[in-house]
Amino acid sequence: MEHRPLGHSGISVSALSLGSWMTYESMEEKDALAVMQAGLDAGIDFLDDARYNDRTGKAPLKTGYSEVLFGKLFRQTGRHRADVVIGNKLWFEFYPAESIETELDGSLSRIGIEYLDIVYCDVRPASLPLVEMIGTLDRLITSGKLRAWGVLNWTAESIDEAIRQANANGLRPPAAAQLAYSALTRSPVEDTAAHEAFERGVGVVASYSLLGGLLSGKYNSGAAAEGRLAGELASPRVQPLLPRIDAFLTVARELRCTPSQLAIAYCLKNPQVTSVLFGSKQVTQVRENVRALEVVGRLDDEVMGALRRL
Image 1 (spheres, one colour):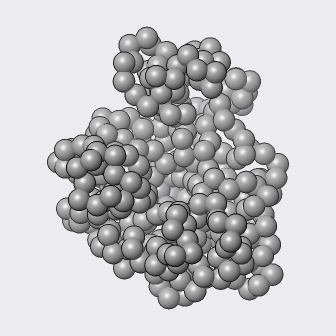
Image 2 (cartoon, helix red, strand yellow):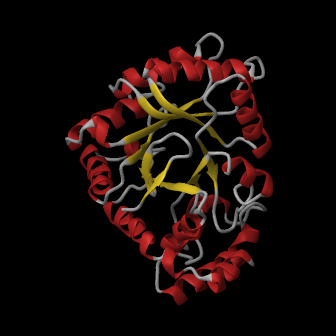
Image 3 (cartoon, helix red, strand yellow):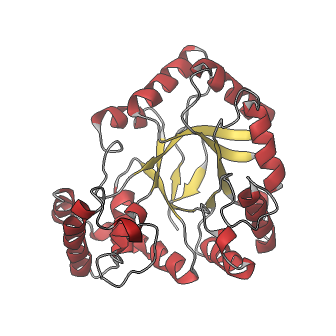
């Protein structure tokens, strides 16, 4: 497994990261454990978690049971906490009634760990001054509850402003940005403004690299009755993408790799990408995605040009 630096944080992470968004709660516990174990066995030591509201109607907590389950599964793997890098989110959902410190403490308690390696901040509330947010995160890093902080789906301009304010006040700037990025959605990651921010020590953690499953090709086969986007194939948002996805699938066939592997490899080819985040409900999917690392070297200028023309 290849490892890359997580921005300026001094943390090294696997080039692939395993997420848990809307996955483990909807699975049998043994199957969820098998997926997490398969990722760890493949060398993925960058695990992503988040608090969200229960959608099964069966969880003992209305919100945050995803974190409880994540922690339970991780302990069952038998791995040491220090052997993995764990990321989570700050949503500011209940701010200011719930402070940043309280929200973080809640996540740590539910997962059952003493610190997070990185926390990604959602777009902050208008009532929370940026420098105040950065100062609080800086203190949490000093306290040992965090090792680094990053941003979630911020604009390039917002990332740049965070770096500027952090540096001006002697505080730690963001080390990573978790951003949607794929062969068909190249902005903002490939925008010039974002490139300048990344050059200043912000690593990209690419999410949504399969474009909600579209780039796996399953919706173009005509056989996909289920899936996150199954009911949206005729929508103005999705329908125009399908011809381009057909062309993407052709490139994958020519490279003799799966479409999912090509989608992940495209993101990994970008030197500013630290890690590509994916979720999975099957061990076979984890193993297939890991082999995307073998495809990166086959993406020469000709192939990359064909993909970018899409």
